[in-house]
Length: 118
Image (cartoon, rainbow, N blue to C red):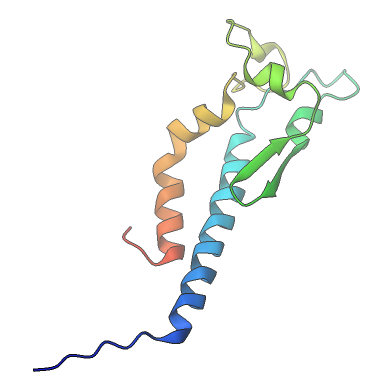
């Protein structure tokens, strides 16, 4: 008994398109959900939402906050009270916080788009 397997030539391009769509979904959902935890200043300050509005996806899998104070706010591990600003949910390490709280939701959505197990 001879078995011959033949690879469908279009399957690779379809799989790449699904993976690209899944990566775009992960990037957009991470950016959207992360904004709930980004600190913002009081509304009376001129650039109160500058940090929150500076988040962008620079390349697949890379989210950058371009505000000059983003790095210092992100790694500020002291018990800083961000609630005095404009966001009561704000915290340092906002990506890690978002990932801990919403990981399953993002993974289920990405798996559905990529065609994997839910």
